[in-house]
Length: 482
Image 1 (cartoon, rainbow, N blue to C red):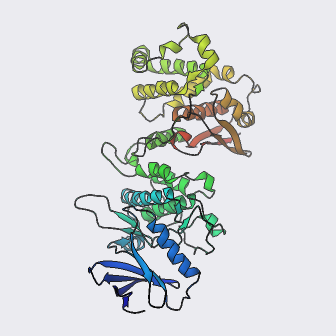
Image 2 (cartoon, helix red, strand yellow):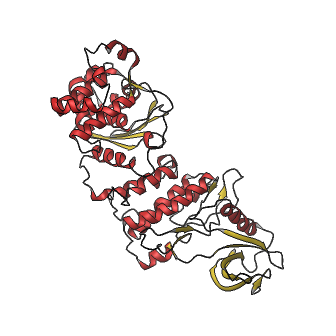
Image 3 (tube, one colour):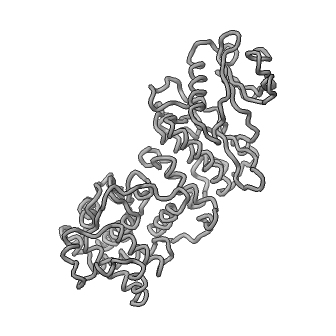
């Protein structure tokens, strides 16, 4: 390789040397700017698949302009006709080096900041129709903080496996690393943005613990984000980068919000889920799902909920709620609107307001009070709500009848049983016109209360994802012991 490439880039030192390409620190001889120059390794033929990959990487990275993606500044061919690509020079520490310096991990807050920076870049690439596919610790550079800012800027670099979603799948194999999604290891081309969700989850675990194996404990908030992001089945992962950013943001304190793990987490698994989900929608990325129409909930579950809330709050606090939620008194028997609401239902948004206001007045502001409310609803009105289920009620009938249970509460979405065995099940609701976390939590709590009334010794229902927060669908996990 000549020491001056194309008459204008003087090579200074080798940065990366692989079997296919080599990257140098170089200097533009005219303007004295340092850059990074990548070209084919010695002996690699041109033309060939290695050169195609080099140019595809440059095209992918050059198609996205973002502060967290290493910029492409030039390209060309050397005197032998071999292609080269020139990138901005980076001065920072690669995640691989950072992990070597801190083998026990860097902690959840700092890891969250770094991963959020990488996710910002990944989101820009996905929106441009580019999937990274092969993200690893060598591809992420942590730059020095600016002034007194605690955030450490991040740059994605050397994304040689990046590919365009709108183009045929590249034929090259992606080398194994623990960060690579399992479907790629099994031979998939990886043209699915959720492979990058997996890699980001592995990066978060690796940075927090210094290891990629799940045997190393992490804080609860990080555990929830990592488990969803690194699910074996892509359908179980966060559906896109925005939703993963909701979860990772909870690790990082911001103005008016401490890291979520500094707050008490309810011992009740369902209450803990509701706590986490309610916190997710307070992050800077917020609630993403826009209502597609006016959806309704049946009047009976609303009236039973109002009764349970009134008993929980008492007359004075109920008066406060009625002041904060205009329209709640119009739902009560004697208001003259019963026949109308029986025929048309109650707006889900109004139901959500009632539940949220009650939780703010008498609960902890994290929706965990829904577990108490649904227990009271099931105690006083389960048979009225679910008259067609067998008597005595059995857990299998409740699980298999989940679509019926859902239909007795609301008139939107498609409920289904994804899987069931002797002691567990996974249920889902998708395609809701107006998804609501309050509605999803109500259904989870009611289902758990109903199963417990069926006589099982132990039962847990958890809400692992919620369409209202941008997840692909609501997912309920049920476990019980006869």
